[in-house]
Length: 417
Image 1: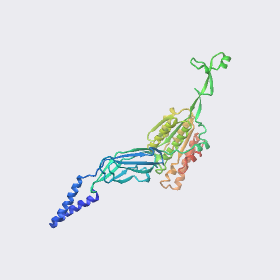
Image 2: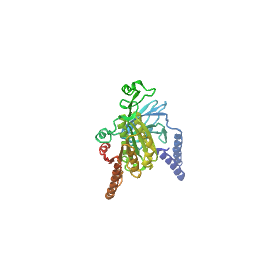
Image 3: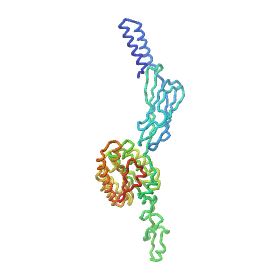
């Protein structure tokens, strides 16, 4: 590619040749030809480029809003000087430069190295790639410039923020039935007495109830209640309507924060957590415990995007057989544009599940991006309140989550039947 200097030199040479021919001045023609010959010779002499680039990040998995330090090391691997090089590290537009600069002009001697350091902030969750590195280098007389890209890439995962909601749940009536490791009222290995039954060959002699044997003359064994953990199911709405609002504040972003925070809270209490997302399709992550499950949930939430219009009842019908008896169910949805919400929640409550509906207010989110007449807003708000009241009438606990309210504060405002 031509530089400005090379372009001016070429235009000058051609102009001098033409003017010399017009006025029959051979000196102009000779000077013009000299310019053209000089450009032709420089076209064969390219700047030298034999560099190696390595990138290191301070973290590859971060939470929304965190900062990452990027170190880019450029090394000249040859025995020749590189001449002037412009290096530019490509950063996704979703990330913002926080400190430093991601480009530099350098001139490295044989074997020399230099480093570019800068910080980027990650305001949006998702999967991103830093790189490749764009390199521009010039020839000896700065008449031509060559551009290339070095395929050095670093993948970054930005998880949704995880809020501390323990204090909020302790002060509300939402988690009263969640105690971490719980005792299920079914027979199995455990400590608490459940019932007596007849002895079956193979039963442990330690489980024989000798008092019952002395009283009835028949061998009887003690059965214990099975110790297990509670299965908590989190259902997140990622339909197309979840994009209502601004880029940073919408139903989907609020929902991912809530899902990550709820899951993290119960996993810390040794409960088993399952995540279900539905939009254009349903994605099911089975209930498990521990840090590995927390990483899976955060990774799934980092990848979700608003699309589709799958109804909630289709989801509840599909997972009914997978939900263990008595398990609590969190539904995180704006509840907009879905006429199956009431029957779906009624079905879950009818099966004995404790249903908690956390609903970001899409009406108030829409006001962040467009002006809604006050009368229309009041009518829409009344319709939404009637819908939430009807849901609470089926036995669900309903939380109307306003955009300017923190998650912990919203969880304290439970509307129950």
